[in-house]
Amino acid sequence: MKKFCSALGMFLLGLGLLGTIINACCFDRGFYEREYEADQTAASIGMSEEDLMNATTTLLDYLQDERQDIRVEAVVNGYVRQVFNSRETRHMVDVKALYQNALKVMGFSWILGGLLTLYSLWKTAGKRAMLRFGYSTGLGLLMVCILAIGIACLTDFDAFWTGFHELFFDNDYWLLDPNTSIMINMFPGTFFFHLVLKIVLIFLAVLAAGGLLLWRLPVRRNA
Image (cartoon, rainbow, N blue to C red; front, side, top):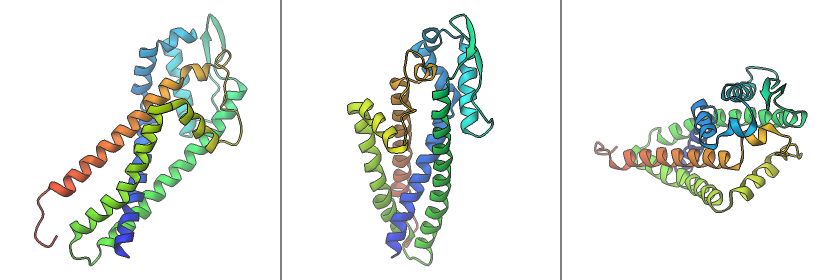
């Protein structure tokens, strides 16, 4: 029973860690700036870099519930206009709901995972062995899932990204026309490919570092 709790606890802690990494990467303004600079996004859309980052900040603030809408004006191709159209606005309502639910799952995973892990260690001889079992079993399963996602991204990212949207959204507002949508031109497939790849690599690096510490650090006898 305690081995099961250890494995499940570690799986949930890993899920919480993944959510934390996703949250940090998605709201890293520096990442957006680097991607925009590499792709010459501002020039391709016809906006200034300042207006582009202002529009980006508007979206991120909206997702974090720091503002109530994504209305923002900018000069686009020489004309002042609303950056985001009605279809993009409706899509962002769905994205915000998904993000807020993801935060709840992340918090639940941290709390329940921590409690299960503590329970598995309570009055348990060989706590290091129990942690190792939970780590290799629970996080090993999660790592396999993440590696599968990474392989899917590398093999056919467009198919992966389409499947993701079809799974989590029950409408087609996420299908945006690159001829009329500024949002889709701000965040093309390559942007999300780099974002997902960054998340996967950071997550695997953290798990590898944790495993190295757990297996290689000296331990007292009977620990």
